[in-house]
Length: 136
Picture 1 (cartoon, rainbow, N blue to C red):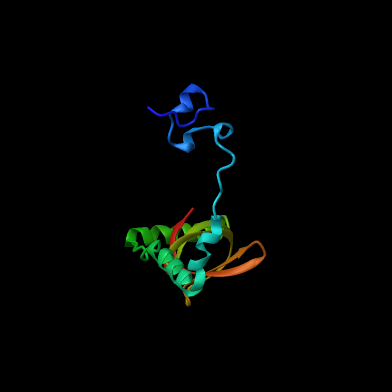
Picture 2 (cartoon, rainbow, N blue to C red):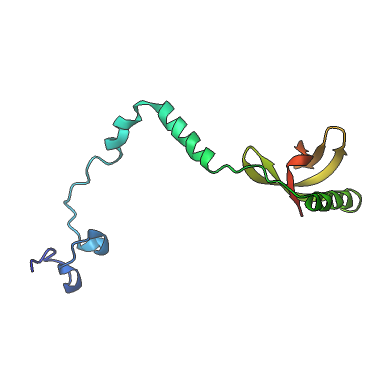
């Protein structure tokens, strides 16, 4: 068998995979190559990368969760309890294909427009009541 690394200790003399050999035993005169410049040619069409990124993001999206009547009643009871006893709320809601989290204080619940108004970190935000998945 041919000795591949003659200057290395015995356990590395016959090793063909350079990733398994410590750096101090490798030949420092090996050229590094072109590196990232090699791939610059393929960046001619930036729209292509944007479209591919959009496809990847769309694969991670989910459908709106459907809640049973029992789950909706539980959410309603928790929301009423939070409004009158503890206005701080932590909830999970559906938005644009993703489940997101939000924490804040309940400002008001608009029954006619089906929205929950939250005050969080100095900013008011509105969340549709139909989008709420869980209240903690």
